[in-house]
Image (cartoon, rainbow, N blue to C red; front, side):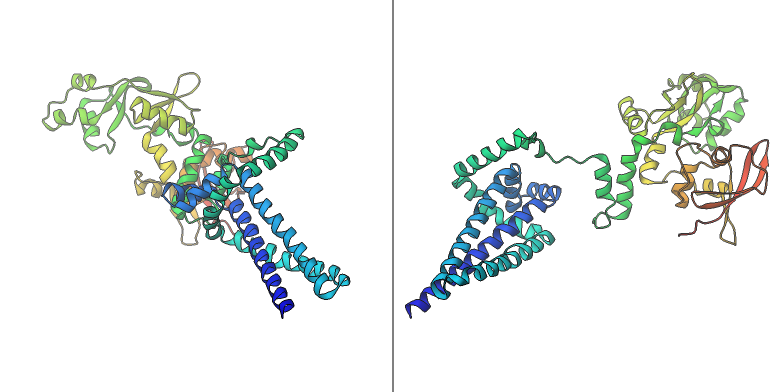
Length: 421
C-alpha cells in the first residue's frame, strides 16, 4: 500500500515538473515573440502585465537566464525522478526505456505544444508570466547576475556585445513592411497615407510642381480691365505677379489683401503693387519632406521653383505636397476630364501633356515616375525618338497606341487597361 502511495506521489510530482517545464517553455517563446510596439502601447495605456513584461525585456539576457535556469532544473529533476521510479519499480533494465519515454513526453507536452501555443497567442501567456518572473528575478538576482556575467563575458570574447542588441529600432523599409503587411489592422486608406509619407523623401518638388507653361499669374503688361476680370474669376487665393513673362517676377499677391478694395471698386495698379509680397523660391531638386518643413518654418504656402541657373521652372504649393499624402482634394474633377477621356471599348484617350503622377493617383495606374514627368516625355524617353502616329508600345504592362503627334510632341495616346497575369 505504501509502495502504491509512494509511486502515485512520485508520478504526481513528475507531472507537476512537466507542467512547470511547459510553463517555462511557453513563457520564453511568448516573451521573445511578443510584438514590442504593441507591448509598448499596452504598457503606456496602463496595462500592468504589459508594464512588467516591458521591464523584463529591457534586459532579455536576464529573463532568459531565469527561464533557462528554471527549465533545466525541472528537466534534471524530472529525469532523476524518472530514473528513481524505473529502478525502484521495474528494475535497472527499464532505465533506458523510461528515459526515452520521458524525452518524448517532454518534447511533445513541455516543448512543442506550449511553444506553439505561445507563438500563436503570445500576449495571453507573456502578461501573466511577467507577474511571476518580475518578483522571482529580484529574489534570485545574484544567481542570474553570476550566470549572465559568465555567458556575456564568453560572448564578448567572440565579438558579440550583448547590450548592442537591446534596442529595437525600425528602419524605414521595415516600417513600410509593417504598414503593408496584409495582417495589419490599419485601414487600407491610412496605410496608403502613411506609406506616402515615407515616400516623400524620394519625391522632389520638380515631380509635383505646376510646370511653367501652366502657371496662372497676373501679367501687369495686360490691360487693367483684363487684370481685374482675372482677379474676380480666379479660383486661386495666391498668384504670382509678373511683367510680360514669368522670369520678370514682381512678387506674389494674396487676394485676401485686395478683396476689400476690389469689392468697392477702388483697386488700382498702385494698390495691387503695394500688396505684393516677396516671392519665395525653392530649388527643383528639393525633396518633398524637406520642402514641407520649409513651408512650415517660413510660414509660406506657395513657392516658385527654379533650376540650377535660377530660371523659374514652375510653381509648387503646400496643397500639392499634401495631395501626395492624402490624394486629390483640391483639384477640380474637370482637370482629369481634360486629360483622360474614357472610351466605350474600355480604353482611355489621354493627353500627352498629362502629369504621370496625377494619372497614377487618380486612375490607379502604375506608370513609371522615375524619369519624365509627363506622358509625352515618358514615351519619347522610352522610344528614344519622336514616334509616328499609329506606333504601339507597352509601358509597365499598359499597351499604348500613339494617336496624334504635332510639332514633335505626342499630343494624344490610347491606353489599354493592363491585364493581370
